[in-house]
Length: 153
Length: 153
DNA sequence: CTGCCTGCAAACTCTTTGCACGAAT
DNA sequence: ATTCGTGCAAAGAGTTTGCAGGCAG
Image (tube, rainbow over all chains, first blue to last red; front, side):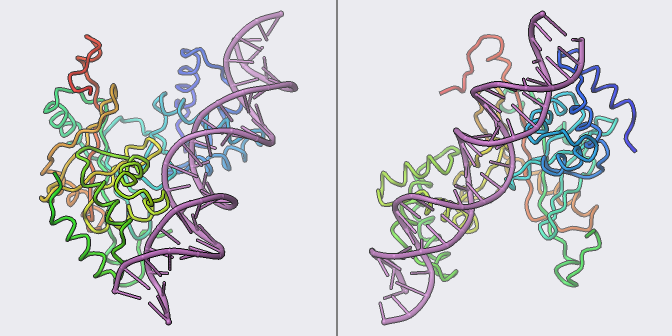
């Protein structure tokens, strides 16, 4: 279940930015909030069309950066060609992404030390950290030995 | 200055994999080793052609994964659409990438704590870490106030 | 000789953009 | 009424691939 306040937050964000609250943008937001795992632009298009079939691919691509900037979505790029997105939970905690090299699933793990790492590393360069991402590639030994990953599906 | 042993390491790697040692592959390696900072596939093509003008774009793209797998290059994806590469130094130490949001430059900083953190985070999922990347976006306050970044150029 | 490697160009994937119509304010 | 937002389709960037000929082993 998506929190109803996210919807309101988005409307406020749009208005403050001088952007319009359209049916398409709200349908795309609704589709995004309904997802619990990571999704691609294409998957989001499908789900948004189920809510409002007038939504086009272009509008999805135009809306994704808006939702990201508005703090409703996090962009996750695992270097696979396409970008993934995920709704941001209420808390603004730091998370690391763990990508399973066997099933390509993306896990998110709370990583409270990350902002300290970011500051440590940035300060060596005299820079001020804006954001940080820890991405771990890991293999599933169970899948490699038994051919079955408990997390599949 | 590129270490002469890297050239040999690559030849051994190719042979062990049953791949052939071609002029094009060696020219591409040479061009890659000559670079000290991050480069794109397109830039590598230019430099490789200066060594052997028969090198094609396709061969560069076919050779990049081979050099990466052979441990000669590290792939760096900052989520900007194109991938960057960088020769791996002799030591296999862990590094974090710091991307300056003002000048888009990529810095690499030694981050020995990273592998520990990769293990910690993976083990929570019962996975074995293969690799980890810490990527920090940071802004240059000096550039923002004085309009001049000491690292530009 | 044999079969991997190559260059070329076309194809591909994901994303962005120009345009005229349509809808939010 | 205005002006921004939209869908459509074409364009764009980066990368991959099919094919016929070329070169390493």
